Amino acid sequence: MPDIRASGTYARAIEAVHDLLSRLRLDFLFVGDVARSAWLGSEAGKGSVDVLATMGPQQKSQVAMMASNRAFRVDRDEVEASEELDLIPLHFTPDAGTDIRVHVLVASNALYGRMVAAGIPAQLGELAIRIPLGEDYALLLAMMGDQVALHALTGMPEFDRDSFNVKLRSIGLGGHVLA
Image 1 (tube, helix red, strand yellow):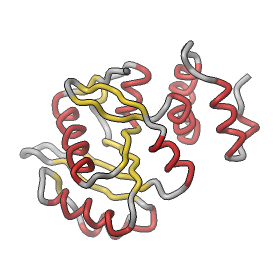
Image 2: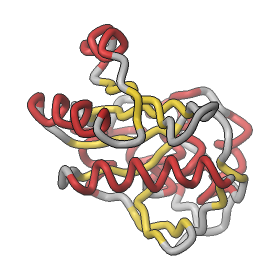
Image 3: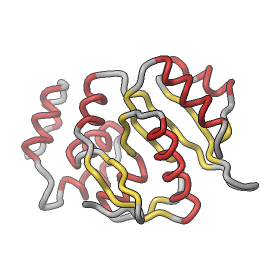
Image 4: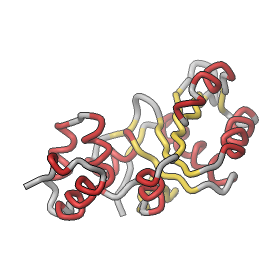
């Protein structure tokens, strides 16, 4: 099981997001810097906490409502502005001077839904959280254009190039398969 290293406040944000979405009984996994830490060994501690979750329209409202009753700040204007993006923007604010952005991306298509379903466990201290498979994380890195991280991940001995190439072909990106 991969280990996640995170700075103190960032780890608290990850734990709070995990608690919030677990209480709503949503299927979700952490992407972004959290997955990068698990797969590439970096420390998560800057930028936003990014989560991919499967949910329906009613549950989107529940996430924002429950978040506002916890250590999160919810800006209704931001939520409304991001409605078409299938994104729920939150701010983790456990104390004065701390404001970590949290992006809950709604897994609104089959590709993302499959990524969430296929997620694997990773360890953050005593907490087991879910991250994408290495091949799914590589796909996200490729879509973001992060060639350095993509090269590092695809160069790992446990990386399944065949599975990654099948995923690329299945979504019409056969021109990007790895040799």
